[in-house]
Length: 216
Image 1 (cartoon, helix red, strand yellow):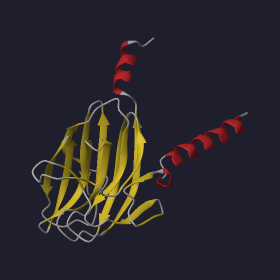
Image 2 (cartoon, rainbow, N blue to C red; image 1 turned 180 degrees about the vertical axis):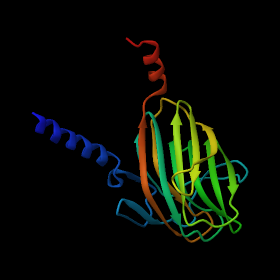
Image 3 (cartoon, rainbow, N blue to C red; image 1 turned 180 degrees about the horizontal axis):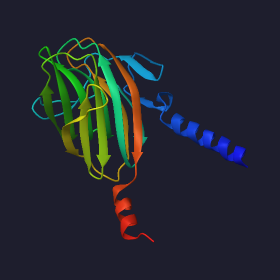
Image 4 (cartoon, rainbow, N blue to C red; image 1 turned 60 degrees about the vertical axis):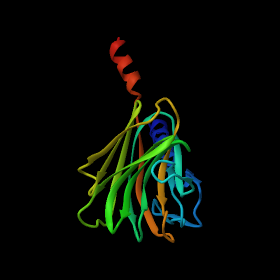
């Protein structure tokens, strides 16, 4: 009996690991060149591609590579991003997307020769916030926590100490596509690698409150 439980536990554990495997995710705007190796995703970002809606620039684009899986509840997601950024607006990071009018993308963006921690929040129209870094960094960790109708975006340079860079609204009780995004609006493409991508399920906040009020 103990052996049966042991093997069942191993099977369940392996299934949980496989559920977040990169191989089981899917593309929106698949780039011409990409590969999965050693639990990391590398791609050559499609030239002249981006995600943006209307505001300030007056145009809408929805054509950059996005490799995603879908989650219906509350979660924490993080990834390590390393890119060979070359020209203005080269960018890479995480994206949480409900549809073409509602999404959040956050990561590192190369603007005017400097590295910026960048977040774009789109609900019908897009806005853009940046934190300019004083020096180039070899990589960055980006983390997002979805709780109720809010998403908190954090950055880190060591996967230990995280700093809040944005708190944004996103419709709750709605499935979200969550995954890896890169864009190259002005250039001819660049190489980027995503490592240690992980999505951690968080128990529903409202249900936890209900359980507290209705404890036996």
